[in-house]
Length: 218
Image 1: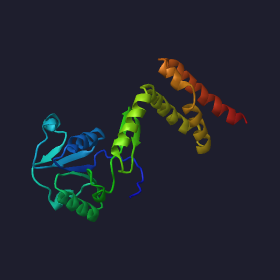
Image 2: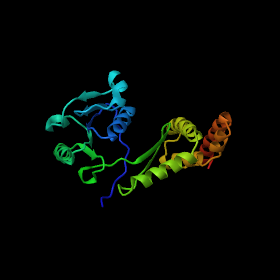
Image 3: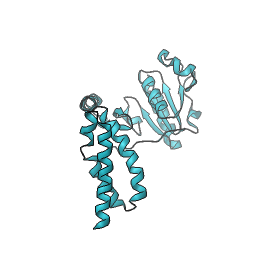
Image 4: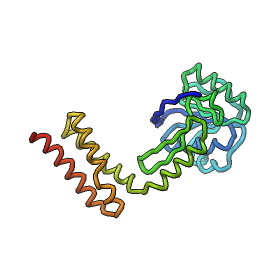
Protein backbone atom coordinates (compact mmCIF):
# COMPACT_ATOMS: atom_id res chain seq x y z
CA UNK A 1 0.00 0.00 0.00
CA UNK A 2 1.35 3.43 -0.94
CA UNK A 3 2.15 6.01 1.72
CA UNK A 4 0.98 9.53 0.89
CA UNK A 5 2.50 12.92 1.65
CA UNK A 6 -0.36 15.40 2.31
CA UNK A 7 -0.10 18.82 0.66
CA UNK A 8 -2.38 21.69 -0.43
CA UNK A 9 -1.73 22.82 -4.00
CA UNK A 10 -1.91 26.38 -5.32
CA UNK A 11 -3.43 25.89 -8.79
CA UNK A 12 -4.46 29.41 -9.75
CA UNK A 13 -3.71 29.91 -13.44
CA UNK A 14 -2.26 26.41 -13.83
CA UNK A 15 -3.39 24.31 -16.79
CA UNK A 16 -5.27 21.29 -15.46
CA UNK A 17 -6.80 18.60 -17.68
CA UNK A 18 -9.75 16.34 -16.87
CA UNK A 19 -10.18 13.29 -19.11
CA UNK A 20 -13.15 10.97 -19.44
CA UNK A 21 -16.88 10.71 -19.04
CA UNK A 22 -17.52 9.11 -15.65
CA UNK A 23 -19.52 10.61 -12.80
CA UNK A 24 -16.49 12.21 -11.12
CA UNK A 25 -15.80 14.57 -14.04
CA UNK A 26 -18.26 17.18 -12.83
CA UNK A 27 -16.97 17.21 -9.26
CA UNK A 28 -13.33 17.41 -10.35
CA UNK A 29 -13.96 20.24 -12.81
CA UNK A 30 -15.94 22.28 -10.29
CA UNK A 31 -13.27 21.77 -7.65
CA UNK A 32 -10.49 22.91 -9.98
CA UNK A 33 -12.45 25.94 -11.14
CA UNK A 34 -13.14 26.93 -7.52
CA UNK A 35 -9.39 27.43 -6.95
CA UNK A 36 -8.75 29.32 -10.18
CA UNK A 37 -7.23 26.59 -12.35
CA UNK A 38 -7.33 26.82 -16.15
CA UNK A 39 -9.37 23.71 -16.90
CA UNK A 40 -9.66 21.66 -20.08
CA UNK A 41 -12.08 18.75 -20.41
CA UNK A 42 -11.20 16.05 -22.96
CA UNK A 43 -14.12 13.75 -23.60
CA UNK A 44 -16.21 12.56 -26.56
CA UNK A 45 -19.26 12.68 -24.29
CA UNK A 46 -20.93 15.71 -22.76
CA UNK A 47 -22.00 16.20 -19.14
CA UNK A 48 -25.24 18.26 -19.24
CA UNK A 49 -24.76 19.56 -15.69
CA UNK A 50 -21.61 21.37 -16.84
CA UNK A 51 -23.37 23.32 -19.62
CA UNK A 52 -23.87 26.57 -17.62
CA UNK A 53 -20.16 26.67 -16.75
CA UNK A 54 -19.14 25.88 -20.33
CA UNK A 55 -21.52 28.51 -21.77
CA UNK A 56 -19.97 31.04 -19.39
CA UNK A 57 -16.50 30.23 -20.72
CA UNK A 58 -15.30 28.76 -17.42
CA UNK A 59 -13.46 25.86 -19.05
CA UNK A 60 -12.44 24.45 -22.44
CA UNK A 61 -13.98 21.30 -23.89
CA UNK A 62 -12.15 19.18 -26.49
CA UNK A 63 -14.74 16.79 -27.87
CA UNK A 64 -12.73 13.66 -28.69
CA UNK A 65 -10.76 10.83 -27.14
CA UNK A 66 -7.50 11.49 -25.31
CA UNK A 67 -4.31 11.92 -27.36
CA UNK A 68 -0.74 11.83 -26.04
CA UNK A 69 0.03 15.47 -26.80
CA UNK A 70 -2.89 16.65 -24.68
CA UNK A 71 -0.68 16.89 -21.59
CA UNK A 72 1.81 19.33 -23.09
CA UNK A 73 2.07 22.34 -20.78
CA UNK A 74 -0.17 20.65 -18.22
CA UNK A 75 0.46 20.82 -14.46
CA UNK A 76 -2.12 18.30 -13.26
CA UNK A 77 -4.35 15.71 -14.91
CA UNK A 78 -7.36 13.78 -13.61
CA UNK A 79 -8.64 10.73 -15.47
CA UNK A 80 -12.21 9.53 -15.08
CA UNK A 81 -12.49 7.27 -18.11
CA UNK A 82 -14.53 4.10 -18.37
CA UNK A 83 -11.74 2.31 -20.21
CA UNK A 84 -8.88 1.37 -17.83
CA UNK A 85 -6.45 1.47 -20.75
CA UNK A 86 -7.03 5.22 -21.05
CA UNK A 87 -5.97 5.67 -17.42
CA UNK A 88 -2.82 3.65 -18.06
CA UNK A 89 -1.93 5.70 -21.16
CA UNK A 90 -2.53 9.00 -19.38
CA UNK A 91 -0.44 7.92 -16.40
CA UNK A 92 2.49 6.86 -18.61
CA UNK A 93 2.36 10.15 -20.49
CA UNK A 94 2.06 12.15 -17.26
CA UNK A 95 5.04 10.38 -15.69
CA UNK A 96 7.21 11.09 -18.74
CA UNK A 97 6.30 14.80 -18.58
CA UNK A 98 6.46 15.31 -14.82
CA UNK A 99 2.71 15.97 -14.63
CA UNK A 100 0.78 15.16 -11.45
CA UNK A 101 -1.80 12.48 -12.27
CA UNK A 102 -4.81 10.98 -10.55
CA UNK A 103 -7.17 8.33 -11.90
CA UNK A 104 -10.59 7.87 -10.29
CA UNK A 105 -10.83 4.49 -8.52
CA UNK A 106 -7.46 3.43 -9.96
CA UNK A 107 -4.74 4.00 -7.35
CA UNK A 108 -1.92 2.30 -9.35
CA UNK A 109 -2.39 4.89 -12.12
CA UNK A 110 -2.26 7.81 -9.69
CA UNK A 111 0.52 9.97 -8.31
CA UNK A 112 -1.98 11.59 -5.92
CA UNK A 113 -5.48 10.83 -4.62
CA UNK A 114 -8.34 13.08 -3.53
CA UNK A 115 -9.26 13.32 0.16
CA UNK A 116 -12.74 13.97 1.49
CA UNK A 117 -12.88 17.74 1.92
CA UNK A 118 -14.84 20.07 4.18
CA UNK A 119 -14.54 23.79 3.40
CA UNK A 120 -15.67 26.63 5.59
CA UNK A 121 -14.40 29.93 4.27
CA UNK A 122 -10.62 29.62 4.15
CA UNK A 123 -10.69 26.68 6.55
CA UNK A 124 -10.02 23.39 4.76
CA UNK A 125 -10.24 20.02 6.44
CA UNK A 126 -9.08 17.08 4.33
CA UNK A 127 -9.56 13.49 5.48
CA UNK A 128 -7.96 10.56 3.69
CA UNK A 129 -7.97 6.81 4.17
CA UNK A 130 -4.96 6.49 1.80
CA UNK A 131 -7.38 5.02 -0.71
CA UNK A 132 -8.42 2.11 1.49
CA UNK A 133 -11.94 3.32 2.33
CA UNK A 134 -13.10 6.60 0.79
CA UNK A 135 -16.49 5.98 2.39
CA UNK A 136 -14.98 6.08 5.88
CA UNK A 137 -13.05 9.24 5.04
CA UNK A 138 -16.31 10.84 3.86
CA UNK A 139 -18.09 9.86 7.06
CA UNK A 140 -15.32 11.40 9.17
CA UNK A 141 -15.47 14.55 7.04
CA UNK A 142 -19.23 14.76 7.55
CA UNK A 143 -18.81 14.33 11.30
CA UNK A 144 -16.37 17.22 11.46
CA UNK A 145 -18.72 19.36 9.35
CA UNK A 146 -21.58 18.71 11.79
CA UNK A 147 -19.47 19.63 14.80
CA UNK A 148 -18.09 22.92 13.50
CA UNK A 149 -20.17 26.00 12.85
CA UNK A 150 -19.51 29.18 10.86
CA UNK A 151 -17.76 30.70 13.87
CA UNK A 152 -14.62 28.75 12.90
CA UNK A 153 -14.43 30.47 9.51
CA UNK A 154 -14.91 33.88 11.11
CA UNK A 155 -12.27 33.16 13.77
CA UNK A 156 -9.88 32.21 10.99
CA UNK A 157 -10.51 35.53 9.27
CA UNK A 158 -9.79 37.46 12.46
CA UNK A 159 -6.66 35.45 13.22
CA UNK A 160 -5.45 35.99 9.66
CA UNK A 161 -5.87 39.75 10.03
CA UNK A 162 -3.94 39.76 13.30
CA UNK A 163 -1.16 37.54 11.97
CA UNK A 164 -0.25 40.11 9.33
CA UNK A 165 0.22 42.78 11.99
CA UNK A 166 2.16 40.44 14.25
CA UNK A 167 4.73 39.83 11.53
CA UNK A 168 5.55 43.52 11.55
CA UNK A 169 5.50 44.04 15.31
CA UNK A 170 7.07 40.75 16.37
CA UNK A 171 9.98 39.75 14.10
CA UNK A 172 11.07 36.84 16.31
CA UNK A 173 9.48 33.64 14.97
CA UNK A 174 9.32 31.73 18.28
CA UNK A 175 7.66 34.64 20.08
CA UNK A 176 5.21 35.17 17.23
CA UNK A 177 4.37 31.46 17.25
CA UNK A 178 3.68 31.55 21.00
CA UNK A 179 1.33 34.51 20.60
CA UNK A 180 -0.49 32.86 17.70
CA UNK A 181 -1.18 29.76 19.75
CA UNK A 182 -2.47 31.81 22.66
CA UNK A 183 -4.82 33.63 20.27
CA UNK A 184 -6.09 30.35 18.79
CA UNK A 185 -6.65 28.86 22.25
CA UNK A 186 -8.51 31.90 23.61
CA UNK A 187 -12.23 32.25 24.35
CA UNK A 188 -12.75 34.17 21.10
CA UNK A 189 -14.39 31.13 19.49
CA UNK A 190 -17.02 30.96 22.23
CA UNK A 191 -17.72 34.67 21.83
CA UNK A 192 -18.19 34.26 18.10
CA UNK A 193 -20.48 31.29 18.69
CA UNK A 194 -22.66 33.58 20.80
CA UNK A 195 -22.64 36.25 18.09
CA UNK A 196 -20.34 38.65 19.95
CA UNK A 197 -17.85 39.48 17.20
CA UNK A 198 -16.92 42.82 18.75
CA UNK A 199 -16.02 41.08 22.00
CA UNK A 200 -14.03 38.40 20.18
CA UNK A 201 -12.03 40.98 18.27
CA UNK A 202 -11.36 42.99 21.43
CA UNK A 203 -10.18 39.87 23.26
CA UNK A 204 -7.79 38.88 20.48
CA UNK A 205 -6.34 42.39 20.26
CA UNK A 206 -5.92 42.48 24.03
CA UNK A 207 -4.03 39.17 24.06
CA UNK A 208 -1.73 40.27 21.26
CA UNK A 209 -0.87 43.53 22.99
CA UNK A 210 -0.50 41.96 26.45
CA UNK A 211 1.68 39.01 25.47
CA UNK A 212 3.97 41.08 23.29
CA UNK A 213 4.27 43.83 25.92
CA UNK A 214 5.02 41.30 28.66
CA UNK A 215 7.87 39.82 26.62
CA UNK A 216 9.33 43.29 25.96
CA UNK A 217 9.22 44.18 29.68
CA UNK A 218 10.88 40.91 30.73
